[in-house]
Image (cartoon, rainbow, N blue to C red):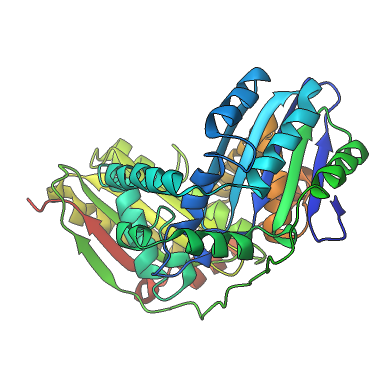
Length: 407
């Protein structure tokens, strides 16, 4: 990993037996950097970056990537957005230059802004056809009420419609600054060579006038609340959970292992009892996500309305059983091997390696090796799991969101 004088960071992993490279530009900007007035602006900018630069049209960009046989895409998350491409190692110069142009000199033409707003309006409409996405958006809004993590990634139509070109440019200049950018690469690329190429490209762009704004983070809410969303969906969905731990917490691995034991795999307690033994639900799982300053835990189930109360009682009963009797050593062993297997298998994919590098540097400031992660998982004991359940699964601090037609 190398940090340039302007604050931009470059991180890479050399894999000599590969003939490909996965290259990503990570920007420390996401929905948590937004307000109710500009909700969705980061995601809109992500769309607009590929719509044209000061010297390329969106068609030129598409032809340039296709002429290299490169795959390219982008995504926006709660705390960052990423533009990336996978390509043959021979095209490093071209692809690096192209991603720099797309990221650092967008045109933001008025006609493209209008067009992409329409595309995102359709994306928001499609979200309403996905009850799982809808209920989790509402769950984040409820649990993180008043906190930036409550903001939806796609944004809201009212806020998007009010965004003018100058709003977009001002936000872009305050977020897409060198100290907020991490360039990550994995594959047949040598670090020293990559850094030199990055330096040559950086010098082509003028970053003057850009400010590095850090958002003010309010306190995490602790109050549990319930919400019902009326919907014509035939299935009735529930999400039950609350505040989890942040990425740097010592609880991170014990909490992830317990999530796996509770509902993170096919052998998990909730999946076996509610789906396999009783057939009450097709979809039942537990999940947890960690962010820089907070986290969230949630248990999701989809069933018919007549079954949802029984499912909810079974979930609470399972949590009480763990509090009373703890988890079995055999359960923890299975969870450890399952989690370690998922981690090791994921890094066999070159894009996943690039994502791990970029996200780690962006959110943690460093990179924990796979072996260190596996060791931390192995170090967790049953007593650690017991502590986790008492700490994070207190019913008076857990919220419930339901979605669907009653009856």
